Length: 430
Image 1: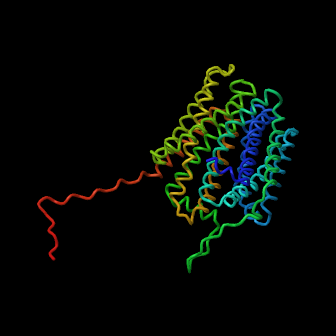
Image 2 (image 1 turned 60 degrees about the vertical axis):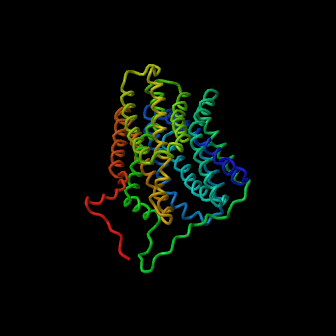
Image 3 (image 1 turned 120 degrees about the vertical axis):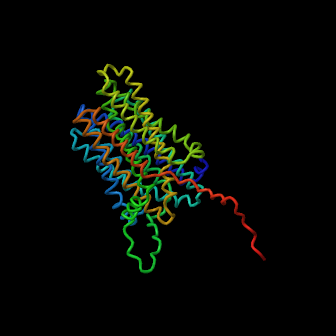
């Protein structure tokens, strides 16, 4: 897998991705603690709204940026997005009200919506060989899992030395380092649009790629099931990302340095599954892995609701290790669904439809998070964490049941019926 790093350009780009992800991980921890400073027990509501703004930028602005990106040289676009993100990170420690957080998060995620599609589009051009590109995709997935595990641990170490607002400086440093690494290599000049397959004579004009992909999801049962499974992942992930700081600080009364440890447990569960799952998928079908994982998300959220409602917070007690175990379980269940998702999509769609299908899944899956984030935050702030967790667990259960109903197992092959007794086939006369 690591042999692909011998390519200098890709090595610099991969390093840029890693340091930017590390900075983003620090920002995730710092943003939760900043929201707690500004809103106290209502921090979950603030985080839910901020993350909903992120999803709006990804779902609504990313397609617009992608449509305009071909006008801008590739390296200039990536560097400009990194500089904007660094500037926003430098401004976040100085905010004094919630609306300022929302504004800066919108700018930050708009820049990320410009950076991510351009970065992803450059990798297959830098690595034209399919074998190298496949390994680059594996490294990218490993980088995301490692970030979710390492960044919280790094944040915990920094919090032991300084205040959480200084974590935003680490975020800015990550984006600036990413910009320098992009500047150090030569990239293809502009974002090239993918050529569309020719239309059949007399066919209707081809619709836009995203709507065509969305119709494809609604027409293929396995893809409708995949969308439901993405909703189950969003229900569990939103609970962790939005309300971890409230669970740790307010419910359990533990110090700020325990927030990244809880997030690290979630990332650790995901990473362990990502490393072990290829061997499992060699022997088990995708359906046999993904559907039970969705029901596991619902069960873990139901258990979390019961744990949250049990007893007063007295330093956490037994509920602190229980929370870590539940967070690790949610990370593992999410990875069991997300990792085979690309395989399922590829098996359900012909090659000509893959670009539209992947674009549709990107938009629709982020739409699931757009629903789950504010639900976790607003409901947690108004009805309490047990009610919010129970509601998200019910959402995950409904999604798992819908996926099971939609994604039927393949019918067994029929064996030929035996010939009736007393009848024999005579060879044909010559």
